[in-house]
Length: 211
Figure 1 (cartoon, helix red, strand yellow):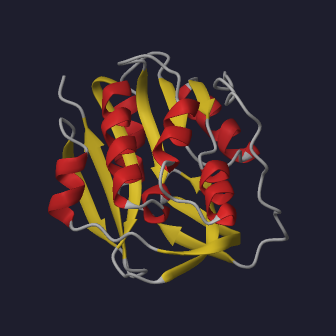
Figure 2 (figure 1 turned 90 degrees about the vertical axis):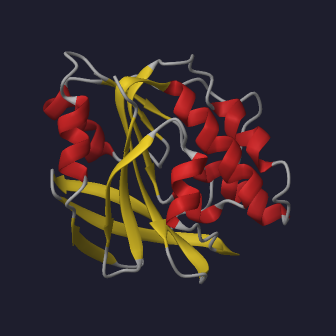
């Protein structure tokens, strides 16, 4: 079972999605632990901050019998990038997330923090921490190199330990690189329980809220 989250007060123009630039398969050591963490609930509620991926909806429905809220925050990021306006982005992001405190068991951030400046990243991380129930888990990727990002990524779950990474164009923006200790602080009171540095210079990270 899945459920669409509340719509933003004003429509946001979606980026033009062209055929996938490339498809890369990557093995995950952390994602299976995210699934295990949220599966302890009989009918967990998940929040996905990325684009809608039909096969992912099916995967989570079959694997977890969960309620899935999908809020594509990349739409707001792309809209701000096209206008050349990053200050105040945090207000647009938080306006989409109208769920109550401690309302979800798991959050999928993917690589969204790579596209945010520090104020937006801090505001979003603090808000997401309030949404997790005790024992909940948050999963995300954090790039370690300050490169210019020209593509967004759809993380397509191939199986519980493998993704297909499908890219589509983004308005270029410099990646906001965060130190490991800064990542830990910005998500307080969540705790980093697993962190793996991948060959792609990306850190795959799992956060937990204590029960």
